[in-house]
Each structure stands twice: as structure tokens, then as C-alpha cells.
Length: 314
Image (cartoon, rainbow, N blue to C red; front, top):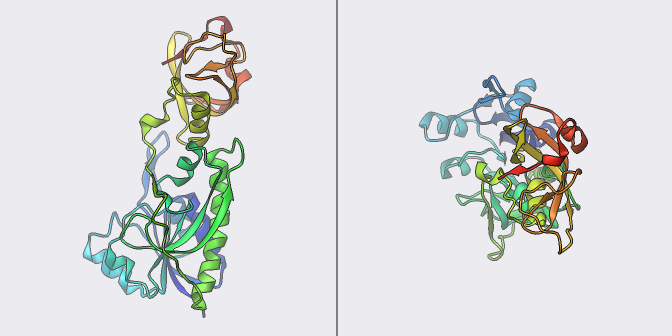
């Protein structure tokens, strides 16, 4: 017998899971997503990836600002779901919502809990130079990613892997893990274990200030930050182009080990290959993006510039 499911999610990462559940034997009776937000240069309202998929699939969709209104709570309860599946929804759920479905609410989280609880587990894992991460299906409670875990899958973070690549690998693996969890739940075979009390680390939301490159850091840390922020929001610096400061994102780069006898200042361009000195060693950008322009290689980026007078602004 198929499960009656409420799906709650917002971005592309969540849409991958919704797509798999729609194709399964289970019945998605309603979808919840965050309201449309202004996006793009024209700041037009844009529906989330999850809402777009739900509407294309003719599934009843709700977009409450929160669950503080009694009408929204009553509406949710009246759906009489067997289980709610939450994937990157982005809203806090009160206890009355968590307890409403027959089997409660299951959450797909993008880390090996209790490491990287919170909003940005994929980015933080790469920025911390973790060698592995993973996915977990857990029972939601009122804490921040504190509930007991049912299923998990370890994902290797390959050398030089960018957050965007890891994100896409994890969204596919996560969707499959959720289907496995739902099939076990249907058979009453889904068992839970409490999370470890040690190793708790929080993956705080990425602040705008963090995305600006701090050239005082070591090349290794700057590379990890670039990887963790690529492609969005992108690690950036300001660069003098024709006498004007222009914001430039570095989407990928390699580390360059400098001889000890080389004297350089953090942020200084050292050669025609656009090698940039850091607090320790240097980096060489591979892919860059000027504000309002497309992604380009370093050779294209430097084309037409006076390579004898290159200096990264602080």
C-alpha cells in the first residue's frame, strides 16, 4: 500500500527528490515550498524549483510564509498524510506540524550528522577541506538537525571538487536514499538511532562578507573557500580594469608553491599567468567571471590587459 506524502522543499536540490518520489508508487498529495522571490536582473518573482515541478505534475501546492497562522496549520493537518518529507525547505516547523502526519516528518540532510548541522553543509564541508561527507534521512524534532537517524550514505569529496559538482552528485544520491527510506517505512521496517553526542559542528549560512577573498589567508584555505563557494555565491575580489575597480569571481584555481626567497605581498599578481600571492604561497585562477559577464578562462580574462601592471585590489 502506497504512502500518502506531503513534500516540503524549495531549491533544485529538493526538486530532485520530489521528482523521484513522484515516479515511485507513493502518492504525493501536496507540496509545500517557500513563496516566489525576486530573481534576476529584472527582479521578477520566480517560483522555486520545487513549486514549478509540483505545478507541472498537477500536485496541489502551498507556499505559506510560515506556520504561525492557524489556517495554515489546519490546512496541513486536514491533508491526513502518512508522512511529510522535508528537503531543504528553509522554514522552521512547529511541533504541531511535526506531529501531524501519521509517521511524523522525515528530513534528508546533506552531511554526516552531527557534523555540519544547519543551513550550508555542502559548502562548509568543502571549505573545511573535509575528505568525505554524506546524506542522512532522519526523524525531525524541534531541534536543528538533532533527530534520530534512519539511513545514511557516505559521499567522497574528491580532490579539487567544487561545491556545485558535489551538490549535483548528492541530490541524485539523496533522492535514491529517500525512496529506500519510504519503502522501508511502508513495510514498517524503518529503524532509527540517536545521533552521536560528540563531533557536533554547525554549518552556518554563508554570509556575503565571507565570499570576498582575504588574501592574507594561506593559498590552501583560499582554494578551499573558492571550491566551497563555486558556482554560487562565488569567491570574489576587486580588480583594477582600465582605472576602475571591477568585481571578479574565481570559480576554480590551483595552488602554487612559492620559493622561500620570493618576497611578495598578499594580493600581488606575480606573473603573466595571473599567479596571485597569498598569506602563504599563491594561487593561479583557472576559471573567472567578471560582473555581468560569462565564465572565462584566465587567458581570455587577461586578453588586452597590460600584464606588466597587474595588481589585485585589497
